[in-house]
Image (cartoon, rainbow, N blue to C red; front, side, top):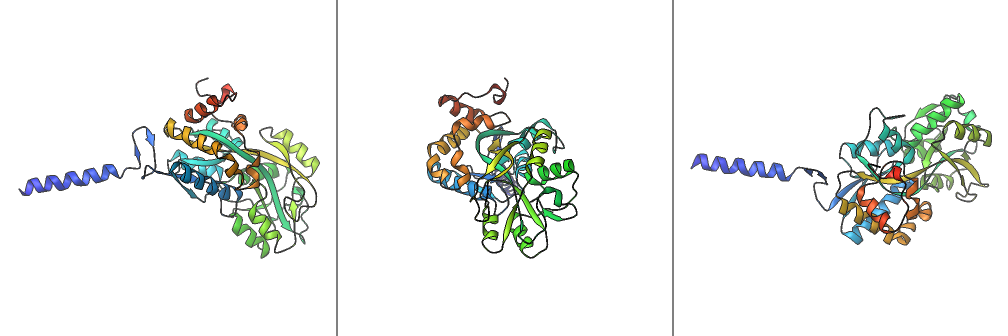
Length: 327
């Protein structure tokens, strides 16, 4: 009898261990099958706000909870997806391509992420106090400049630009909220990020103290864009921030939502379809999303997940062969 009870207890323990596993063979999922983890950006960033708004739509329309985590940004999100600690992440496509190919920032090939859809433009966007003597990137040598968490796009891009221009700031890797507090308190001299505009943290700081934008000059932008063709150029319009008194030409990239390649085709299809069927609502979350459209899928730089590809084909979108795995 005692041996039988011991066997039953052991069997129960084994069953509990198996049911607690976070994924089933071949299919990635959170511990709760109705939940996903989404990697966004640091608190105060546009992408944290945008992804949080998106998750509410997915929860309400699909009954699927996406738990949004504040992260270091695209590089961190790719690494989280690779480790299956997140199943969705927002990633700038230049860094996604480098990760997929094992180039640039990547210490290896990050091959478990697939694109779902393009969301919005990422703008290189800087800020300093109005009393600062920093006017452009050539004034940053020896200055304390925050470029966001080490896993974010600006931490990679700003260093590339400064190395190319021969400038050597003292880099500080602070989240956006901490960057604004440190800037206001005089602990750093400036902050440069890359993401959607307007950036909530910049707008809030500009409402409390006199500030001005920090960007590349036209000559610097021309040189940088020729040296790094993986980036494009764009304009942050006058009035995007109250302190922005003229249009600013700057470096740009594209953000896309990426998913683990082993998420089921049906789930990714439903996530994609639900997003675009509720696009008017999603666009109200942040001004940056207003340009979102199915046709922007061409902005993705790594293969699409088959579930997303199925949606775009149904909608008659011309998907480039480079985004179709196996082509």
